[in-house]
Image 1 (cartoon, rainbow, N blue to C red):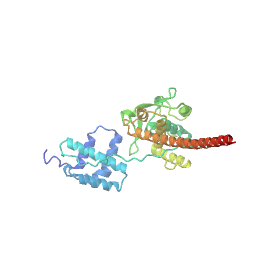
Image 2 (cartoon, one colour):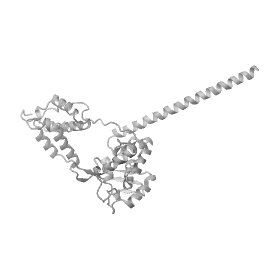
Image 3 (cartoon, one colour):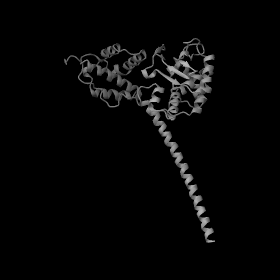
Image 4 (cartoon, rainbow, N blue to C red):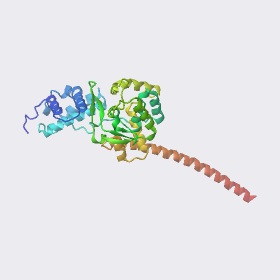
Length: 326
């Protein structure tokens, strides 16, 4: 390896690294944002060969003081990926990103919301969004999957929804039809028969006309924007006393309910649209916790019943003893 090989500015190499990748526009936007806000200010004018392990450690500690752990983890993973390519290009000998676990976002588990509360939310949102809440919950769909859903992919006779696309909202506000972020995201999800009447009424009353019309649109017929829906959502969640409820929590409720049916890990992965088992295992863990709570309640019932049985048996023995002595 030539001593001059690594004398390339990080900002130049990183920009070319993104340009060379075949990635979605949403992913490209995320990468450029992470570079601009978190990596370039520290490493931009550094030559690749000058970035050392200690520099990365100091940068991460400083970032954790001003940004969320999840954001810093994503920035670290991007830095690591860029420098991995620099190693492959024989510009540097080794990658200085060697902090174990630093690239894994620490996403706290969301609190479980009861199903009655979810139905309260469905009652509080304007009628045109009721089906949005129900399908997001009982089919475990993401916001982008719901916003991008078209009539042709919602088969109410077969009671299934085919997830083949998503509507992404870029940083500048541009709406973009995208494919799911992974092959596992393309899936067929069964819908409970009990919400089919609500979905039929929605299609008749609110959906965009035509075979390829969007199922969910705004009051003026425009595509759904998360930013525009936020005000409606904030009011509904406040009305039911859940000011911290996120729309994505509806998917969490649906996944937890699915895990509670005894679904296998593979079944959960397919329904959720995950290629990795990591998220599905979280819901199975939640189900095991609930199962343990059930077992504890059963145990308490057993203890109470046993005490009653012993008391009754003791009283019978005393009665027999008195009868025998008399």
